[in-house]
Length: 381
Image 1 (cartoon, rainbow, N blue to C red):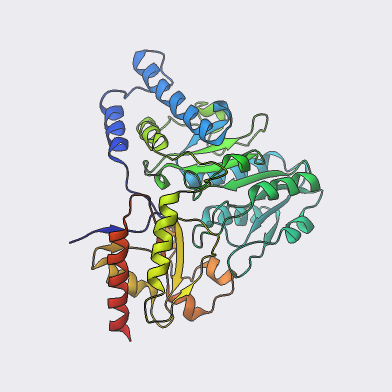
Image 2: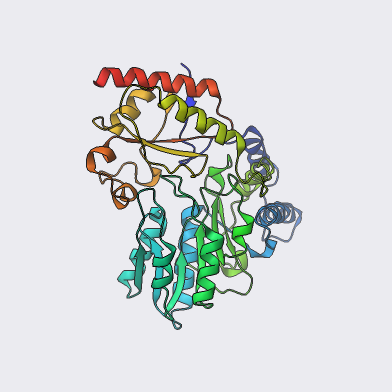
């Protein structure tokens, strides 16, 4: 059976060279990077190379990169690390209603401990109001956390503009961005200059699961969430995931180099436009929830009158893999908090699926998917 994987915002298929690098690390470079002998030094060399490559992609310093177990841990470390370490300055925090669960749950936990959190509202396509953000910043605000690309809608948030606004209103407010859905897919480093903290994940860029990183601007202190042997300059203790970090290196090498003239993945943009053109030919009501100027990777669509879960399983029977939204909440019976926040009615939310592309998808795969969607829709109506 033909297999078409279109759930790349949930995870990506590891590149063959990623798997090879991980196997080599497990079989040959298996030392502990904290050990002083040759095996330890070999492992430490892998860490240094990966740290340098991430820093190069972000146009930051290697010593500003902290390895973590993934995006969720990076977000938790950034948000809680700042909140706990700087609560003497103030206990007010700002985020949005449409963040990833790892961000929202971190803020909810801090609220339970007495922090005050402002949740910025989003419009029909998930975009926030910069005027509302500016009004929300006070002398007590110690952190603003806003994602770069929304994981369900593909909405792109203007981080450079947001960062400038924050620092003008309160220079002591830190700015964190969850860049897990944007790193390696759209131009990032101009925005990173405005950021104090930035989260990324390996398995969203055809790298391994279980490895992520947090950029922390030099001079900023965080309250560590894991204590122990002092790894990662005491910010993230525990023996580093050397095989995961080794696998991250070829994944980083495979990423395109973006410029102001070409700020996003051209192949994914071509695929998304082709898919949208094909959707318009389907003779059933289709609602496009993603903004026109969103990420080329993510397309959120609704078929009112059909349960998204039913369509997902029907497509899976044809070898096509898509999702309803955030993989972290996909098994929850609750409706998407993102789609509720942007004001979609329950019938539209119930009929939602998310298509997320990879540069390794093909036009032929998309045509097959469109044909299968049209076939399935005919069986429902």
